[in-house]
Image (tube, rainbow, N blue to C red; front, side, top):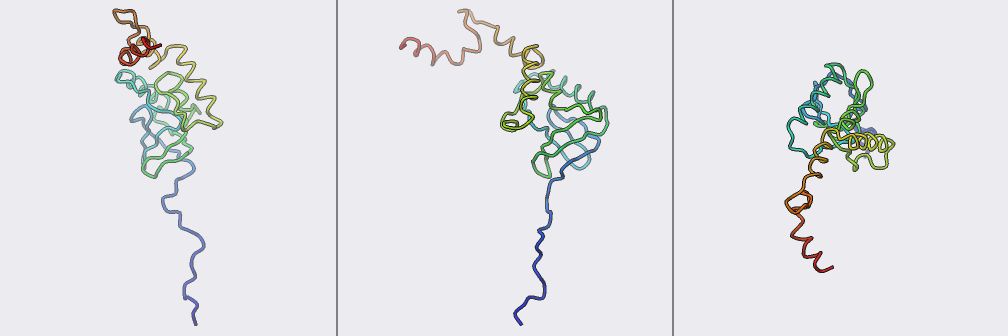
Length: 171
């Protein structure tokens, strides 16, 4: 008899399968990362504003603490790993944490994640409102853009002058 004694399982085990949702008390450890019992969650759809301004990060953490208030955070898992999940998270009062950070100019939209999703427009709208109002990192950008050197050229252009000047002479 060539039939095996044990029939192969037709259902694969759910090893390292991400949960659909995580709801638990959490704390912000940086403007884009929450930590709670059992794991770390990075907020979906946003990325760091690439600012070296520590006060800006501290203000973002204050905002997060104020929004969460040591209550449960409801996160819809969008991807990642068991060690660091990526999720859209909202507070107990249903405030989307990423949108609040965008609205205050503490982060920018991660277009790689939001592109072609139903959330893209809302995320871009909040970022644009912060930019127009000069909030958070956008206040720093406005300040940098308005500074000029002794020749009256914008300071942000300085790193490119060695390339631009010869090109200007050619054309």
